[in-house]
Structure formats: C-alpha cells, structure tokens
Length: 109
Image 1 (cartoon, helix red, strand yellow):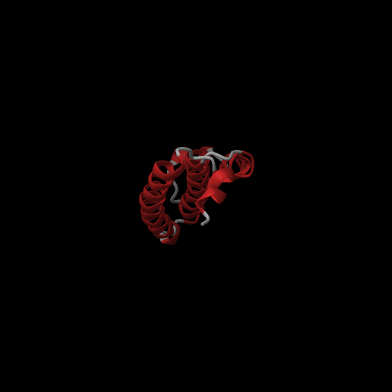
Image 2 (tube, rainbow, N blue to C red):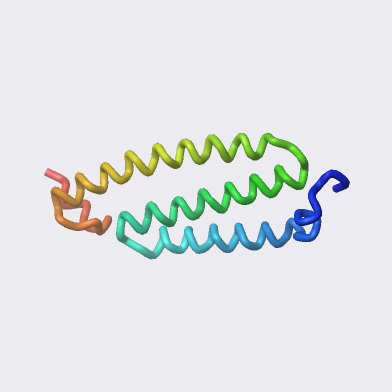
C-alpha cells in the first residue's frame, strides 16, 4: 500500500465492503418486496452500483485498472438496459394503465 493516496489509506476496505453490502441488500429487498416496475428498475440499478463500488474499491486497493474497466462495461450495459426497460414500461402503461408487475397477466390473449 505504498503507492496509494493518503485518503485511500485512511479508509479500510471493510468500510467499502460493508457499505456496498448494505446498498446491495437494500436493492435486493426492494426487488423482492416492491411491485412497481419503476421502483424495480431503480433497485436493480442500486444493486449494479453497489457492485461498481466494490469493483472500483478493489481496483484502487490493488492498483489495478481491470476493475475500473469492468465498471465501464457494467455502466454501458446498465444504460442500455434502462433505455429498453423504460420503453417497455411506457408501452405496458399505455396498454393497462398501471406499472404494477402483478397485473401483467392482463397482457395475455
């Protein structure tokens, strides 16, 4: 840990692990409990951001840029997912006038 900045040396990796775990658990509980499609997407994004935080913190502590490259690709895929997902949610809302995922069985013929 000789080449790390002073601020990074002051914060142990366990703090990053605990914070990212808490964010991931909040996102997972939101996916399991909530039924609104927009909130589900927000919780999935929260889980992806917690993984990004872990990857960047490990990359910083190991002085390796590979984790940050993975974060770049995760963010690109997440942006594409949100664009497609929001388009699907808008079309579902236009058809059944709700974003409740439990009522998607109405889309059957």
